[in-house]
Amino acid sequence: MPMTDRHDPANTRPEASGATHDGPDPALAGIGQAMTRMRLLIGRRFVGRMALKRIGTGLELSDIDAIGVIKRVAPHQEVTVGAIAEQMRIDPSRGSRIVADLVKQGLLERAASQEDGRRSIVRMTASGKQVLEQIEEIKRELIVEATAGWPQEDIVKFAALYDRFTVGLETQLDQFEQGE
Image (cartoon, rainbow, N blue to C red; front, side, top):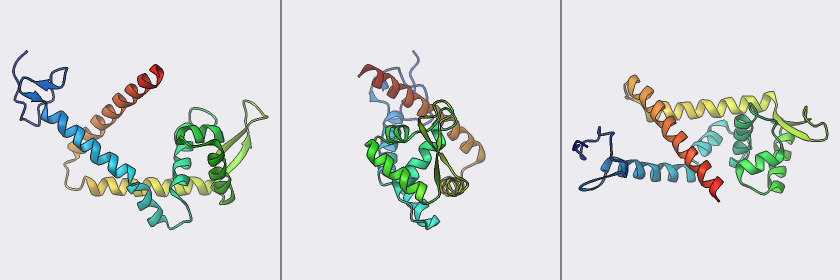
């Protein structure tokens, strides 16, 4: 294998082990450090808190999470309170309280399942979709601000690489959870 300059940040061909003859690949270490910073931003709920502040509704972070679950899951399957709780990794009774509050606010509605009429599903109302659109717009604004000054080709490349990286981590998560 040819020697590569491990100090070159453009070096995208680290050895399979992620190390060179001189030690860990600095590019991979940089990704790890960026992941830690991103985890801290996510843990501080920056985007959600910013959205709540800008929207000015009586919503809480858990409400945004539940709406986000419905957005992600609904295209693939009917959404139940149990599915929301599972995706949010919370107790079903807490999930039920969150959904009840969102129904009371007019953002969600309950309906009978088309697959099993005995089962209740949850879906967004027009008001819920409007709130989701506002949240998505705020997220886009934050991304635009974070990438201000980037050439368009860098944004396009980053979007593709970030998605590819996330898919790789999701695959590892699936494998990990299947092995447990």
